[in-house]
Every structure is written in structure tokens, then in C-alpha cells.
Length: 274
Image (tube, rainbow, N blue to C red; front, side, top):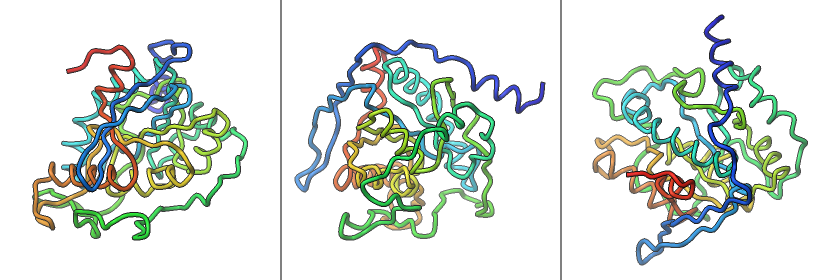
């Protein structure tokens, strides 16, 4: 059996849990106003909710991003996705630019087979920051910053989603905003959570990202402990990488969507977490 056949077989393994009938997600979310953070309750039906895993690639020119920080969040991400599946939440893997790798996966073919649905607004190839909708980002990121001590060539180094991320039989695979909207329309998905990287770039700007989902009328939340920012502390505002990521999350909470933690999803799924 070839390596690709082995990966295909692993991808076809069944989910570990059976979805609960009419399961609910009661999530404590954090939103931000001019006066600071406030807490709100999200009461979502699991079957009307989807999680999009954004650009968790197998490699990246920035080793700090792809090896140290991205790899570190994968075990918790797998645990969270398993709990969400058990509730009946839809899981979509969106490793942009790698759909050729997944051409023969049933999770990819299943998404491609969904009938077209006309969106209420244009689905953009990229949703750029529009000053009419939000303030400038709080960190400098216009040159795709990387905090490696010694940088690698800034070229494409990824081919697929990170192989340690579990793709269950019930999941779907797409990086196409229209395909994902088609599926949401077919399945009655009204609520969307995003996790993955990077919060200030792909998570916000992709055609399936936060800006686009809000413009399509979806209720959106960011899973704030399962994301990261592309930020170099040697750039403005000269804070630690961790603080830079926090500032981007706060920006999203202020202008676009509340955030939740993986612990809230695990709790909803009846899974103890620390």
C-alpha cells in the first residue's frame, strides 16, 4: 500500500462519537466594546453550526509559526473537533491551495456535489480590510512578518493540511467560499466557528473567513485559543508575539465576532478539560 493509500484509508475512519439528537451549544463568548470586554451567551443548535479549520498546513516558510505554534495546538484541536462532531457540528477542513491533494477523498467529493446556492452578497476571492467596516489592525503585518531568528525563503512550502489533524468520515474538505456557502445553505448552517491560522490574515480574509461569513449573514465566533497571528515582535507595536496575537483577537472581538475557547466546546460535548 502506498503512503497516499494509507492516508486515504485513515481519512475514511469513522468518527468516534455518534451525534446527539437536537444537541445544543451553550457557549460563553467574549465580545469587545469601547468600554472593554463583555461576556455574552451563545445558544446555538449543534446541527446548525459548523467549524472551519483554516490553513493548518503541513509546512510554512515561518518555522516558528508552522512547527512551534501550529503543531502545539493540534492535539487540543483534534480533541475539540471530536467533541464537536459528537454533538453533530459540521467540520470543514480548509487548507487553502491544496485541493489537488484531496481530489480523491470522499470528504472533498461530497462537498463538490452540493448544488449551487446564490449568496446574498458577492463571495470575494479575498476580503481585504475596509476602513468603512473596521479600524486598522493593531499590529504591523503588511510584509508577512515572521519571528524566526533566521528566515527561510518566503515561498510556498505546504502541500496539504497537517497530517496530524484528524479528518473524520463525516467531515468535508474545501477552500472555496462558494462551495462552503452551498453546503451551509443545503444543511441549514447559520452559525460558524473558525479556528486555525493566521488570525490577522487568512482567518479574517479568506473567502470562507470571518469577514465573508459575517457579510453572508452568519453568526460567527473565533476559537481564540486555537489560532495564532503572523507577527514579528521586531515590528510595531513592539510587543511579544503572544501579546500581538491577543491584540488581533481583541480587534476581531471589537469589529467582527465574539470569541470562545476550546474549553467551552469541550464542556458542551461533555468532555472534561483543564
